[in-house]
Amino acid sequence: MLFYLFLLFTVVPLVELALLVWLGGQTVWWVPVLLVIADGVAGALLWRWQGLRALVRIQEEMAVGRMPADALVDGLLIFLAGALMITPGMLTDVAGFALLIPPIRAVVKRFAKAWFVRHVQIQTAAAFHTTAPPSTGPASGGDKIIEARVLGTRVEDA
Image (cartoon, rainbow, N blue to C red; front, side):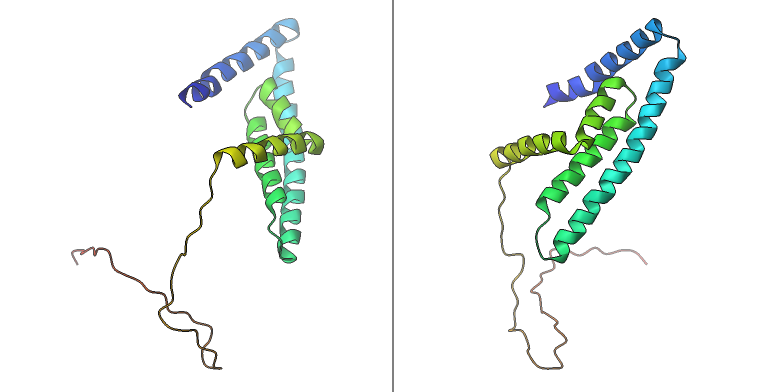
């Protein structure tokens, strides 16, 4: 993991900087600057549009009582695309734009799901137990009694 973080925070910025310097040497100095600004503006607009579409899908699926797993993964990938496009540089912008294209995002989503199935183990356990049977009378109000225990107390000076 440390190796991947090293690559992410040292090698990628150095490659990005080298590409921008190379582009500036091949053209006029302001071309890479304009390219980074234009990519940022276009990326922000696409990010907002795609993010709102994912949010609407999440709300629609929840409204009909389904778990919006695909829409949540789309939302996560769109968020990642925005983070990549905020980072100045051409490689990160290309990767961010690629994640905003739905067919490419579908391929990445398939790989992400396969990775999660292999590496993430989900366990469920009972969160709480009620100490009394639920009341069904009209005065019950739907309250539940939850068993609780104080593990420690904190005494503060007044």
